[in-house]
Image (cartoon, rainbow, N blue to C red; front, top):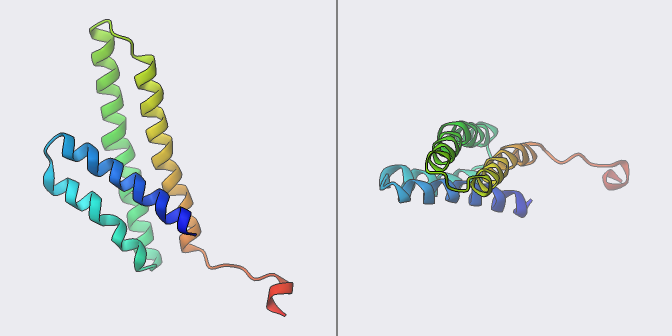
Length: 115
């Protein structure tokens, strides 16, 4: 389970670093401290973190990818590598949303483990 927590922390820290790049210090702090909620392990907190990541994928990474690619195309600069990198960041963040489901679920015991 530690790898799930690590993946989610990295996804939030990527958002934090992106916010720092644009001098959004309050947002940077919120993104950097959001993974502390993982230690509460209440399903509502995990769902809230998933919702924050999901919304951030669209609002932050989606708009950044579109704007950056359009800017590169307008300047006749290479843009395919940027689109691949941004796609990777988007899929990484969506993967963090998906694997957070494993934190919410309670482990199911096999018959062998129950005995």
